[in-house]
Length: 96
Image (tube, rainbow, N blue to C red; front, top):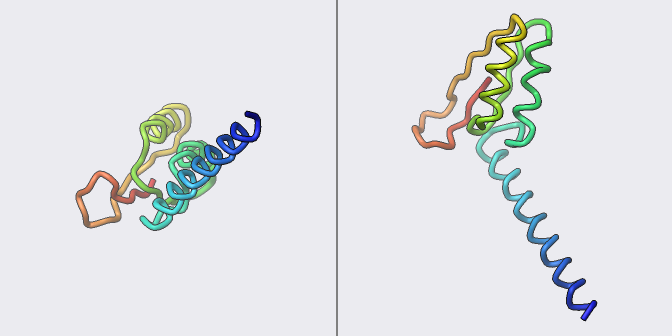
């Protein structure tokens, strides 16, 4: 029936919303100021900016590492990635 499929759609949308909110909360709780979906997009702006830029994120994604490589290849920018957590876990915070 259409009412049950509407309820299923709402339940699915609510689940997606909860998952997205949890991902953002995990990143913020780890000390990052961007989620994994934004961090790579900010690299080109950092590369083109005058002076020094800093960004605190969760673990760098492959897209972010690729964006850093590309930005260094096509601009004069140089990036230094530094772990800011004393833990050696995979999800350490990093600054680019």
